[in-house]
Length: 464
Image 1 (tube, helix red, strand yellow):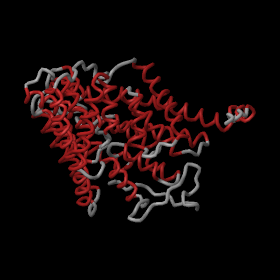
Image 2 (cartoon, one colour):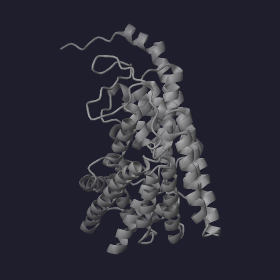
Image 3 (cartoon, helix red, strand yellow):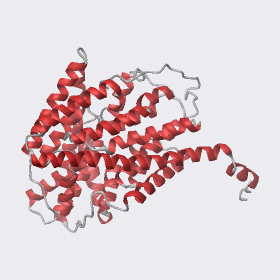
Image 4 (cartoon, helix red, strand yellow):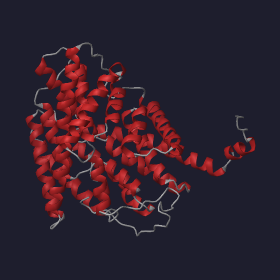
């Protein structure tokens, strides 16, 4: 069989294609700005959290005033000016990929939403909320890439959103491989061949921007523990099962709690939403004060200490679990990535104490992987992101096992994947999803069933 001849003229024409270079420049420029936005967001959010922790350390009762007031202010601002900025941000990016029209996608990923997400998440951390910036960075990244696509005349909006989401994860955690895996596993169940190169470009450029501005670092430092014997493997199994059940309980509690409060608030609207925010703020403040301030903010320092081998108190993970759950159902903007990692590390530290092992750092990492996989039900993303964040390449197989066990246990406790269910809620509230089969549109604007879809623009409800 003769090899096919290379058509040099065709290759040359493709290389010199104006449309191809236009698309590439849009993706590259968008990825550059996603990296800059990720670094800027990190600086702002860290400043907000440090301000709160500094003042809280001097005045122990301050959170009892600041946290509830902050929750109410943030919820009111979200409801009034940018309802699509509520919550994590990952469900909004997922829902935007499922929508048909550019106007509908902009309802979830507009410049106003970008600004509100950054400002309100920073304000939430400055109020002591148990949130993180990583999930919001996904929405910001998706929105930035979509805007560049609109400005540059590139019609491949699904690919833009996917690439921006992956670049957001890469920039937020300094984990380029995790950004790619996240795009495949969580954001897109069907990773198209024509899209993967664009996602790689976006992740690489965003990662280089983060690397150039903040240096080469591991998010949680370095973990040196290794699984050596049968006893260590037993701890892998324990972390996988316990972490998965705990993660599933969080996922189910967040979904059912959010839906129940949504139904309760619907007849009255704003007044009840603000009352919910006030009560949630008081609960988060009370938990924080009782824990000596450990449960406020992302919990990054506690998690890092657990990985280094200094185990957090036995009740830390439970308090952080409760504070994160209450914050999530309050409806204020903020992610659950970093708090979930902190809960998992604390849970691992607690398990290490129960078994009196000298591998406390290793067990903290395993607990982190299992719990995180249980919450987001994306085991590949869980073990890859934790492996990169802790530079723990020697424990790839144990991390995989813990993540898969966590995922399996979580599925029994919480059958609905958290982010997918929340994304469907946005689509239902916008009138873009019902019980019947949905017809979607390709990136070139053609209906996948052969027709043309031109639905009217729909704004997301404030309680989405």
